[in-house]
Length: 400
Ligand code: HEM
Image (cartoon, rainbow, N blue to C red):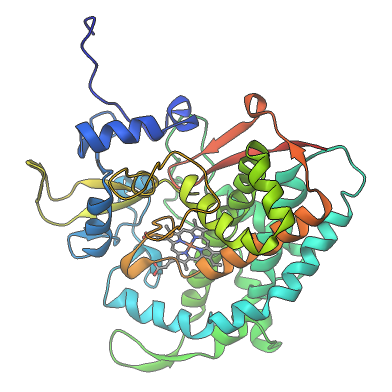
């Protein structure tokens, strides 16, 4: 480009260099290209707070029927019925209300003592160490145990299940996610044996409740879930609840190391922890963008997004929109964090948000009690960034 003339804004969600600090790019998109088009990967992007809300609320125009992940939309994969996160009302609402009936706030809250016990067990193993990787030794461990106990997966099998479930989401650095050759998503058979086993050995867990739950299906027929429908739920929960929450704990680890004064406040007054988690969710949201498929032409800011396009809705940009937030690029655990978009909005608003917040709170409470001071070296940290989840692949920390 010629001297003095800025090149047009460019955003590539698969570019690892942009992913390290995408916020200046989002700022330019909000200002210069509110309806951004990327011709390399052929998708549109919305970055302003009000456009993010508009798109997430208008499910008729911005459909989830092809999934909420850019690569999956573009691959045009056939989605099994009941895949909640890849479905539109009215069918979506039937499956969502069934899950909300068994995945209640009361059930979530009742998990707190067991979550705390898992945290204590992990952290006790780290006592006395000067250095360790916060991700493998702590952050990755907790959500896996929690999902495992929710779904009734025996403890010895949880790691295997997690490795296999995560394998789906792996991408090569700087490349879009590869859609498997058989075009299957999730690992449909991964949990099948547990469902069959649970049917004969009911317990006080979510799996048992899914097996027993009666509902009225799309045809108005009252029945219980089929094995395939239960499998789909289990896959969605394992896929949505593991890596996301682990990455959140990782961001707490790096952001608090980089803001030692605010960390000291949390150590002195743990009642500030929940708000610090809200601010972390705003400042470094785990998934930066949610994708949709446009069903009809959309006119926006003088541009047309044609029917059939894939659109990414950048919640990470909404969380830093200067028209909505005061000094959005400042990390402040005292900030009043209203209008967070990290968990989405509208019909697909994250069903696990209370669980993720609970796990992060308990994890941080227990961690700060044992390790009030630690440091990280951001220059050596490796970021893992896919179109769905962004966080530390490893987070080596030094205690003291
Ligand atoms: C949906 C984020 C943790 C279960 C969503 C959506 C987002 C999100 C953005 C909406 C996707 C869309 O609109 O297409 C997160 C983040 C988490 C987290 C950032 C952690 C920090 C969890 C956990 C669970 C969970 C722990 C459950 C164990 C779900 C489910 C949906 C969902 C079932 C689908 C809801 C629907 O389609 O109606 N999540 N999530 N999430 N999440 Fe989470």
